[in-house]
Length: 199
Image (tube, rainbow, N blue to C red; front, side, top):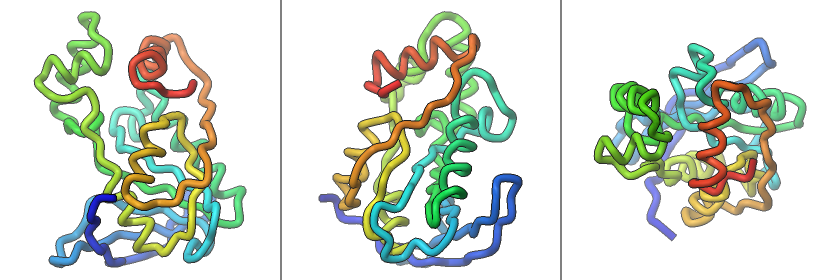
């Protein structure tokens, strides 16, 4: 199990949304540096076992602009609906754009995808690993929130293993079913074939 930073809660505030009533929480590390990642909570999560959790990697193009190239916004909205319906739940929002390469490189990767590369090939062509995401900070956030154990809402088995490697007790995985579109069929097929997503 990897050593994690002992994050502390920096600030928390109400976050009323179209989906429901949430609380947004930010964090600092042991040096006092602010962490870019946040947790969006519904209900009281401390000590809760089998807490419904979505660890969601930032996707500016999908989450904010509604890009049809991916299913990111659909998954985020489904997760927010899911935790609103539960007594308690959390979305941990990770600033890991483009599987960790950042927005500028992601735009370059999009241009390569338009020439026929898949999403992993594009990242690799730019000199990156196909997926640079790390779930250590997500695990540290769940620990700072004193979550007992989680039911992880994801199609990605590697995310389950990533959290477990950092000491999070994942009771089970629950799939997120987003309706595919013509524009993201190749993207979803790549996630299924090359990344082991259970779609």
